[in-house]
Image 1 (tube, rainbow, N blue to C red):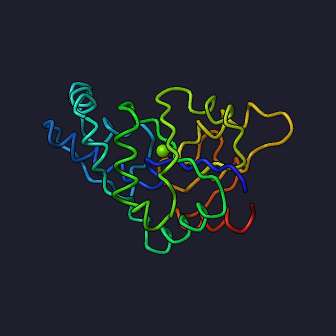
Image 2: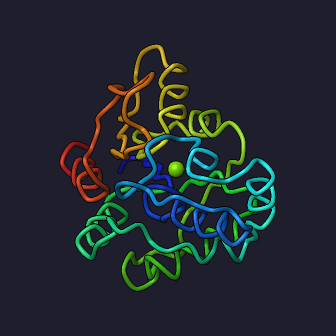
Length: 201
Ligand SMILES: [Mg+2]
């Protein structure tokens, strides 16, 4: 049984479209994403928001808002089945940098993964790390990580001298190119990331 950390936002939950709508609700004249995702990590102003509107939107990210994010469109029934299998075989912790405490993440996982029915556990392990996620993951001594944030993957890998955890980056338009593009294993989507771990761990 391996210890696996799976990022929630951007991997399982669709943060970006919810934030896009929130910016529009704050009065921003938003330009649609060209593809399924924005093409850079700091996209708010590039797609039409002012700094003031970004500030207002960030202030409106309540626990309820976080708890009601849509599942990412890649969270298909097949991906859910794979995730259930991963949770059956291994110790999975769902990780988030949400600034609002654990309840919103629990609610989200319960609602979207139907945790008790599908994953057959007493409840999801949730780790909320608004800052320095890599430090927390290092302290957990994880065997594997699924992430969409290259900075987290790079920082975590930089902490190891010898035994390195398996790091899987889920491919998104906003994490292509730049530093660390080729670090770890890059999976084309969430299902492939889950299947990769099922195959290799
Ligand atoms: Mg993320």
